[in-house]
Image (cartoon, rainbow, N blue to C red):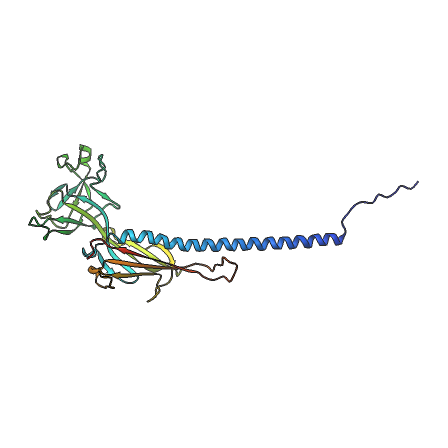
Length: 300
């Protein structure tokens, strides 16, 4: 008896080809969706980065510019793309007066009174303003007198009898500052002091051709290298510059006189570093801008 051949289930070549075609179509659709999502998120990240640069600048600049006293001579130079100004780096008070020097209280006190406080400790070559009460009891002859620190600060005694220090350890931690001139009698013990140095904000172009807002200051009267503070921004232009400064007096009129500046309007303009497209349309560069106003202290 001849055994029967059992038919085995299988897939024909036509069926296999149909399945492969369907899988190919599904894979193609999935890849297109994935690529579209990647482009969307890349574009969104590019826009977010550009707007973050604008916001960062709108946070950093006002805190520095607001402390400027134009009537006090804090603006050294100004243009539509840069400003050089007197940057306050600390405050203190006169604890002891010697021949050609003063001693100030230490920066750290148990009372946490903050008599001496600074964002950057003074060095030789820095400058300080010391309050001069003048010869009369009125305020007409009062003034802030500028002095240079002519030697590296060293420790010296700020006695507890001055009431600025409370312990012998604090007294021994006083700081001696050698000055370019002796203090007059109208700047006695207890006179206020303000430390400052030259600082600069301005547009500059990097080696790779990007336009950034740069910053430098001059500790010890030696200016450091320009540090990028934000960007890239649009290149400099007579109108529509990447970072544009405008200066106004107290009447709201544009002024070129440094001592008349009452407010500074800053406009920041940026462009995405690469073309973007959030809606699936044509990819293109996107520009954004931010404007803010800074009112100066002691303005006229």
